[in-house]
Image (cartoon, rainbow, N blue to C red; front, side, top):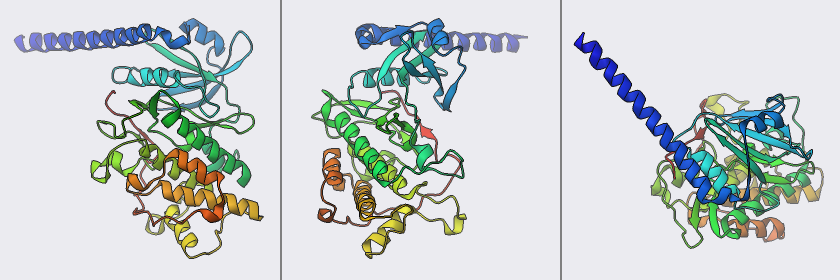
Length: 360
């Protein structure tokens, strides 16, 4: 009998602590929004969100964060509504997204139009991007929705993303490190202009700081820079985003994940090594869709830039400003980088998962 009473008391104590922490988290977010003056963004109620999305009728996508729904504002403007599920950590992902993206204004960064924070409901309202995310255009997987964009469009997308990252790293009063650059987080408008999205793992840091403090790893397996996993490779900085960018544009070149999913584990091909060897030996690139000199030049620029970006030592990677210069410069002037000291990582079910970490 005494044992049952003790267990009951412990359960009640645990429940009380949970609700106390949840209440504190809610107050912390409200305090953040109040201190930032709502960041000049419109705040919507949950009933507004239901009205905007027509009771969540059209789902555009889903991820670990929650779901994205198509919506329409009263003025007729189409929007994408990102409905967050749960309250991870201290609500740091919600704060990250609102705090970072509300500071931005760039053609290659998605625009945040408003948010909802009401009780357990949280949502973010973005401009609608009719062509969805980049991954569906470069990761075929046998999908009927796959569509070859063409080398000129791929090249322009690569340049646009580079400009967006250059802006985040240098164009803002406070430098923004994204930490989750990947095709899924690149959205395309009706003209295939790319826009960087999903700032849930972003970190703000002063422009003068080159190295940032980071607890644990963050990002998506396959795009995370070595130094984010282990500080033995160097300090974490804006060069970590450069690495992710390099892995991404190499996937754009290859039209698939950097590890081929069409071969068995014993003979799996790591695309960056394969393409480096062809480039180093002066062989034909052997890529689909290269039909003229112009597309060959675009592909070659993207490959060389991508290989520079994935150098293991962060100090050997170019800044995003330099990346833009390289992409827009003369292909013949680009030097082939040293072979990246990499290995083909094991293919696991979590290769596409996002790693979440301690709050900022």
